[in-house]
Length: 372
Figure 1 (cartoon, rainbow, N blue to C red):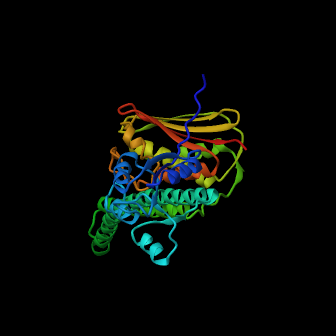
Figure 2 (figure 1 turned 30 degrees about the vertical axis):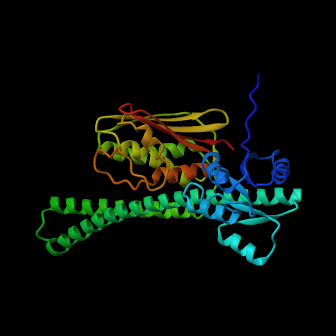
Figure 3 (figure 1 turned 180 degrees about the horizontal axis):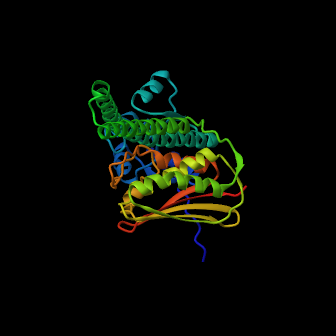
């Protein structure tokens, strides 16, 4: 037996004290909508709480609570305030129309009913309601992203201020006491200045990259390149940083065909993966780099023996402005943007970037791109 997917039918609450009107509207709408019926204003208010309709068709002329009073009560309650109400009426006087809108109605359907008009008005307002909900969700997402961005910018400004303070302080000492300082102290101060300026430059570059990506202006300069040579080149660049932490790099690079890539951007991604593996590995550990050819795709991977990444952090890895639980093992700087930038650059090559990791068992970051 094959299960057929259940299609959601929007829920309509029809409120009218005249059975004939209820029957006509139910026949018009029951094919495409899930229908519930109320024959008074009080019953409509109770049903709206339980049935939770997506839209209410509400008769104006009813004994007891009329349609306007019923709508007023629906709009006064948090649980039913956002449900769109379309009035059913034979009245067309301007004052009645204006009162209906003032009470919170979104539209009118006049008697006698026109089948096509009823369906069109209901579908239109359901679509508007759906768009309003989607807009609300997107606004919440933008608000969260803006808060993350502000938090990140605060941290980035703090890191930059510290680095600039170090540059200013050490350069001032060198300027004022150059001749009196021992050579070893001068070298140490110059090293601090170089490292601090390097941190600032990387952070600025990351911010510029993410700005270009978010504006949709990321462009690739594609040329046919020897991929294995590119990988060897960036392994060699990062060998220096591995040696400083007594970390051993092992590479197993298959011969792969030349492929059409933007070598600067692919090199940037390689550097990011290698640099992260070195940052989060303790001295004496190993890092394993592989390049594989699957026939129609190239896979580049970097496996470390670091602390691993929790499932919670893995869900945030490739998002912008994220700071994770794990910290670099030697106080290295981290903007939190590198992986988000890398993911976009690989996707621009029609590829994908991913991670496999468990806490205390290291991490493997990899990307694959098609051979074109």
